[in-house]
Image 1 (cartoon, rainbow, N blue to C red):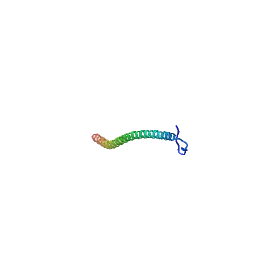
Image 2 (cartoon, helix red, strand yellow):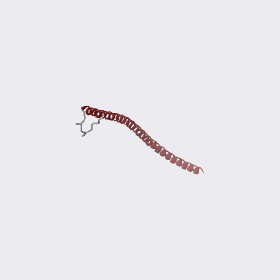
Image 3 (tube, rainbow, N blue to C red):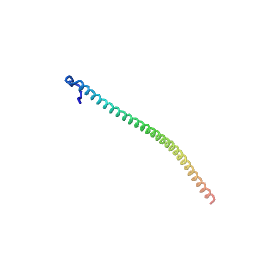
Image 4 (cartoon, rainbow, N blue to C red):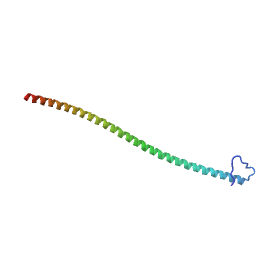
Length: 111
């Protein structure tokens, strides 16, 4: 098998040797092309898989952001409820104090 390479002298070769060499080079190029096409297909499949995974991750991220926002809203609502209950408790404490003072005053008046 005669490998025809650029710059080689083909003048001393027979036509069949030149043809054989050319055919060999054509086959090599075809094999290389097929190999590269296969690699491109594999890379495209990988890209498709990565895109799909990325979309899934973006969906998960959006879901998590929604959950965090919801919990933030709930936390704000709970803070407001707690604040309101603390104010109500302070009011009840003041009422208890006043009632205690009134009771003391009534007991002092009876004595």
